[in-house]
Amino acid sequence: MDLNRIFLKGACPTSIGGQAIMEGIMMRGPKRTAIAIRLPNGKIHMKTQPTPQGSKWGKIPLIRGVVNFVGSLVYGTKVLMYSADVLEANCPEEYEKDKFDLWVEEKLGKEKAWNLLMVISVVLALVMSVAIFMLLPTVVVGWVAHLTENVLVLNLIEGLVRIIIFVLYIWLISMMKDIKTVFQYHGAEHKTIHCFENNMELTPENAQTFYTLHPRCGTSFMVFVMIIAVLVHALMGWPNVWLRIITRILVLPVIAGISYELLKWAGRSDNWLVKVLSLPGIYLQKLTTREPDLEQLEVAIAAVKAVLNDGDDVPYFEGICDSDGRQLKEETEEKEDNNESAT
Image (cartoon, rainbow, N blue to C red; front, side):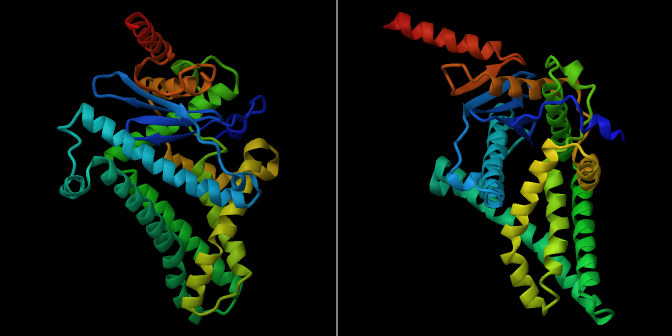
């Protein structure tokens, strides 16, 4: 692995960030957000809308890490559910809803059911993440306390167990067919951002020349969280298991805030220290990304170009477009012409 192809010296870091979803990509820029999904018929479904402007809390160092993490989790869940709905509408026989989803829709109506399922998904994701990756390791390592009372050693073992559980989880889900596709789109997202940051023409062929690994990835954020957690937890000693569980939950916002600032610094720097700190996350991205094909890169490029089209007077769009966004613009203009002729 050549780190010079990841921390590219001539690159101009962008504030555009993305997320892989089912059969597509979400790209989020300062002014516009775009969701591009490859439909079963080969066409690209596009949805664009203005990017919500964050609160003042999202600009304060350390605090902004927690605010942005929660916001990204909520919005990311919305986008995932949206992609599932789009694919279900275009290929209902392959994406059938389960009995629980149908029961909730019948009782509450489609819109309320969608909101309820999103809330349940976010809450479950948070609870499961905290339980599996934060609380389980400290309970397991509690048994080791009979062998040593060294606080630093106990916290290091706990951190190692946490990382092992996380890596095993990623490795296991990567075996699933749908997750493999999501990881391919994750790779397509990174390649496209690399291509854009190096001022190269956004084409699938150009993007394909880059690595699927990127220094400003959410995967690296999770690794930073686990490393910072070891240091913060070591300062709190090794109390009884219940106090450890409570304190680990209470300091999560502090750990997330520090990790976010570290990730932002790593994203705009390329000195040797940044490279050393970024290595664990970079290697983990080898599990969370896969080599995309040219069609998947085309979807990622379509999303980036839609985000860059900030000068468009029509920020909201939902329909079919091509990889250059031309069809999106032509369809919008055609609708406007039809409305004018009708009046």
